Image (cartoon, rainbow over all chains, first blue to last red):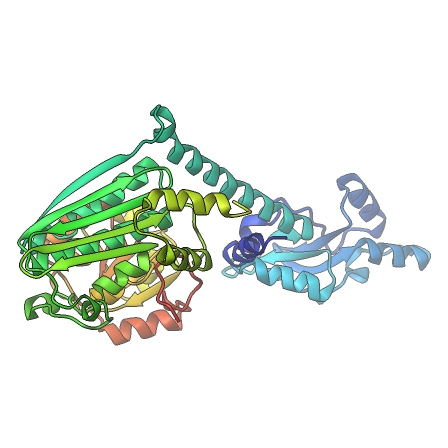
Length: 340
Length: 130
């Protein structure tokens, strides 16, 4: 099984609660139910065991095995309370599914009664079948969401008939306008979501845009953020007319900052902006001339997901000639990958 | 941990419009990040996370929004700038305010099993490199 799917299942057994996948309609018997009647219950309900409940509280568990043992003893007239297992292992309703999986595995049981933590009452039963069924159901929901997302994101570009389509968004950022800061990034984020870009890519683009916007506001008289969106990649360009960065290498160092005190007092200017943009981007280019202005260009590939893939993409991009269009590079890398 | 449970643990109050409580009290919070340094917060994925902060300007809401945080809680009972509350309402960001200090808030949440946003499972590509 591919590693990714294992992770998804592992994630689900942590995330799902026992109460979400258990069988809620529990068939139970009284301690005073006769063993003779138990046979009918097990047969009619097609179950191989059932909790024994008295006044809503779980007092034991009786299984097909107990029943067979009773038969081999000659089937003496007695009630469930005499043959049931009294020390019952249970799980709480609000425990992660993992807990139930571990217990079922460790104890070799087919089922575990589920108890409410607040009232101590029996609220359900969880079987291995419930676990598998619950996981499948949630995987299906995830799958459907993924499919829906895929459909949405491709839809805008599928409706446009051309050899190459691109959506261009432009945001104007005013310098020193701290109260309006983030408005462009916020609008970009809403737009990307609306167009159906997946949440992770959207966040990377929004964070990069926010950092770029902050830089324009703090250091320049204002500028423009231009976003080019095509089915393969998001390209974000931030341009201004000065003052320019004297030493780009220094500016890229995490922690290096020339931000004024008022910015620091507001919780920014820790010298993380440009490094953070770089982290969010698959490709980054920064050109600056003192007195003329700065041009930042980044690119986020949409189909490259894992960090390893992004790293190798970065390494590949560096060694290629700068004349090739970034979007084409993205597309070719995607074609070269053996698995989508 | 549900947002309403967090509110109780922190003796906090909901901020903003009235129906926010009904809309968000069942929001599931998976982790927490406590910081007054927005530069740092921006390097994290806030997906499913609560942001605890002592900063009260409107940029906190922006940062929480672009980083996908699920909710923001302001510590030490500081008065919030009205623009911040208004922005949060516009962007659908639930806000809490607690009289507790940052340390006390973190301690209580940790004791209840909540863990740091950067130490829980990776949600995003925008994660600090090890």
